[in-house]
Each structure stands twice: as structure tokens, then as C-alpha cells.
Length: 108
Image 1 (cartoon, rainbow, N blue to C red):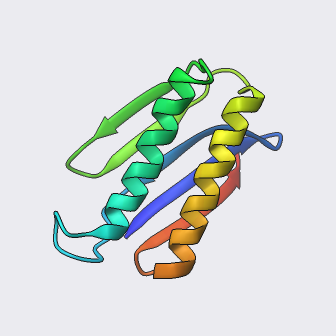
Image 2 (tube, rainbow, N blue to C red):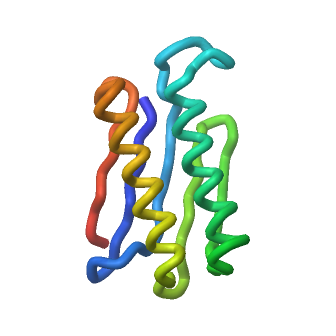
């Protein structure tokens, strides 16, 4: 199962962590894992290129872990990108279920 925790501080995005593999299908054929990966990586890339946001990104490929921290409050463009990623992840979760994707939004 892929677990994603969206972190907010005072109601504003402060980072997110994505960990695990969906387990929907074998490696290389897992459409849930691929969809989540595309959303997460595209959001990180878009935030760097289009929103010019500073962030700390660490990853561990074997464990399927990506951890992103925003050292400063993010701007409106980045908020829109995060909202879009969350919407996409919620849609995947609704379609494929909590067995493969668990999304949590927590105040930290």
C-alpha cells in the first residue's frame, strides 16, 4: 500500500511524505503506483519550475519514499499545484480503494 501524508501547519501546506508501493500489480505493471508516482514527481517538478518554490526533497527508491518539506510558506501557484495533486490522489483512492492508497491530511 502507498501511504501519503500531506502536512499542514496553521492550515497551510508545509510538506508531504509518500511511502510504500501500491501492490495493485507486479512491479512494472502497477498502474496505481505509476499514477501516484507521476502525480507526486510532476508536482515537485512543477513547483520548482513554474512556482520557483524552495523545498527540501529526499527520496529512497527501494522503499518508495519521497519526503518533501517547505521551509517557507508556499505561494499561490504552489498551493494550486498541491491542491491539484491532492485532488488527483483522492480520485485514485476513490477508484482503487484504501487497500492500495491511503491519503491522510494532518496538521503538524
